[in-house]
Each structure stands twice: as C-alpha cells, then as structure tokens.
Length: 520
Image 1 (tube, one colour):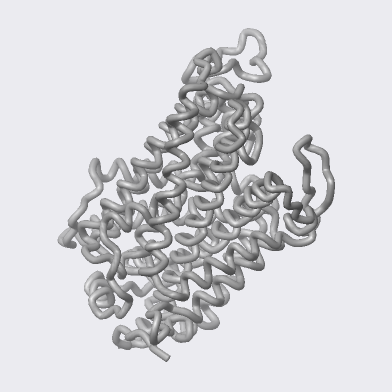
Image 2: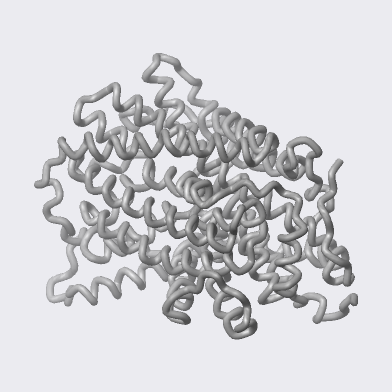
C-alpha cells in the first residue's frame, strides 16, 4: 500500500524485504571468504601505508607512530564489529545504505547514499592522485619525463625532489587514465575483477612483507628512542603535563580542529586521528553481500580478517620505517621509497614503487566497485533512475551505472586537489560509520528476534564507542571552512533531489513489489 505524508519520508524496508531482494538478485554469487578478505586488504593497504605513515610520524607522533596504529586499529575494530553484524544479517549490495533503510527510514537511507558517494567515489579519485605520483616517480627512474603540468590539478604547485616549485598543474592526466582503466575492468565483470584484484593484492603484499623483512636488517634501534619525543613547542613552565592532561589536550584539539599538537602523548593521539583514514576500506567488503557465496559466514570473516591483517602489517611497516629514517625526515608523499633509498638499494626502490602502483590500483578497483553497487541498489529501490540498475546481458554487471561513476571519478581525479578530495572523502566516511554504529543499536532493540549469525560483542558499549569516535574525528574535519561549506551545500542539494525525484519514484512508497534487474 502506498504511503503519504511524513510516513512516506520515514518509511522503512522490513528485514524480510531486504532478505527477499538478496534471494531474487541476479548478480553472480562468486565471492568466497578468501576473496572477501583479499577485497578488504586490496582497499585498505594503499594510500595509508604508502603515503600517510611518513606524514603522521614526522608531524605528530614520531617513532610512537607504532602506538598510533595500535590505537587506530582498536578504534576501527569497533566499527568493523558493527559492520560484521549487519553484513551477516542483511547480506545485500547496498551496504550501509540498506542497513539504514531497514532502521531509520528512507530519507536517512538517502542521506547515507549521499555520504557513501563521498566515501567511495571521491576516495577512488583521491587514490588515483597518489597512483599518479608514484607512476611519475617511477617514470623518472626510467628517464621518462612526464610534463609536470599534466600531473596535478589546475593551480596545484608541482615540486621537484628539492622541494622547489617547478610548475603549476593544468590537469592530472595519469590519474584520469587510471580511473578509466579501472572502470573498463569493472564493466567486464566482478569475477574477472576479483581475479585481477587477488593478483594485485598478492603483488603489493609481497612488496610490503619484503620491505619489512629486508628493512629490518637496516634498522637502527637508537632511532626509536625516545619512543615518544617531547612536545614541541614545550609547555609553559609550571603547566601540569601528566599523561591524562596531555590526552585531554589532544582530544580538545581534535574537536576544535587545532592540529598544532606535535609529539608528546597528545601527538600520538593526533597521529592516530590522521592515520585513521589509512584504514578506510574494510567496510567495502559489505558492499559485496549480494555476490557472496555464503554471506552470513563469509562477510564477518572478510571484514575482520582484512582489518586484523592490515593492522599487523601497518605496525611492522611503521616500526621498520622509523628505524631506518629519522622520523623528522619522513614528511614525504613516498616515505617507504625514502627508506629504501636510504639503505642504498635502488633496485628495491623501483620494486617498491611498482608495488605502490599495484596497491593503489587495487584500492581504486574496490572503491569504484562499491560505489557502483550502491547506485545499483538505490536504483532498484526507485530512488534513482532505473537505468542505473540495468545489467549487461553478457557481463552481468550494472554497466551504465559503472560508466557514469567512472566519468564522474575521472573528472574529480583530474581537476580537484589531493587535499580537497581527501577531506571530503573522509567526512563522508566518518558520518557513514557513525550511522552504521547507531543502526546496530536500533536494530537490536527494534528487531530483537532477527537472526544474527554474527553478533557485535560487548553490546551496547562497542557501537556507542564506535559512534562517538567517528563523531569526534568528524568534528575535527568540519573545522575547515571550505570542507564544511561544501559538505553542507552538498547535503542540502542532495536532499532537494530526494524530494523532487526520489520521494515520488520510491517503489516502497508506491507499495510496489521488489524489482528485478533489467537486462538490455
């Protein structure tokens, strides 16, 4: 039966409806637990381990970056446990979008869809910019010069190895090429994409593990001391700076957007906030629910397995990194390459860059994959045009949807700066994570009899801590005026689109049955 008024805005899909959609889906179910673990690793290991580690160590935590990774890994585990419960109970393509549709209603699900566009679509563009940087560096090692104007967004300064500005960008052409190639691969099909992803993940894991093993022989333990460098600048004389006071100052800085904390325990906390974004990607596994062979079992394994493996690799890599290069010298977009150059193995530096390129390629693959599946699900619900759910007759993939996502991601990759892309992507991610944690709490009380093959432990403490952690970090990002203004305008425009189109075409609002895929 069709609904009217406010009831239509906050209408919810029943759990039975969501599970029925999963059973009627025509997407090929080809992904097992190992595929899902590798899918998660493919998305997590990328920009964080190849780019962010050096910046966090040099600017905030020093050698204690190892501790920062432990802190962030624990915090991400709270969110991962929530995702694992929802993914096992509601195995659908829409991920967090479908979860909120079943709990807080259609308009909130629409907002979640908007947030996931930032998280997946813009994040893929962000990663492509890092991919471009490593490719240009590798090309230089091979005496191939790429015009600097074609390696950055319009107006962005391009610097040489000495840090001098040599040009200003016009368009980031390598980043556009990278997104275009990944888009074509996704059109061919998820089975083929998963196979390529598994190969790429194996390559970059080999490179990371090789760096840990080979680099460990060149570690100078004295560079780990002091583990937590003194705060810079030093606190005023007479100021109480015990451990809990420093932690309090750090948390206040996160909330107010004051990232001036450098070293000390406060710096370790700030370092954890910075590298939190290195973990984004574990939840991308949840977008593959409709293509999982045994989602109730495999989804939790995929999400938690990927997070645990990546946390261990992050800690070991950062330990070797700050043991080879003084942490003050690591504020570089390619810190691992800096470390390899320091120990005098140029052949391995080239290998590391190849591994970075492979790693970032797999991240782009997973992010764009997730974005297309979210659009696919929203289209099936009538909230977006039906063309976005059109499945290719041969490849069995939402090909029109994938082309549109790819073109938009290419535009962002070529013409937006890395800082702008990263900030907006992180805002969408944190807001989405907070809603997921809240959804777990809601469904526990609203649907206590729901079959949950995996249950978040220590309920409700874990989802509450996860939501609070996400909101604190979200507030730190929203302190930036440009980011805040864009985000608010984006949400307002998106909500207007819902009331103009989505509200009137919603299949749930019209009382229509679940739609089947359209194959043309």
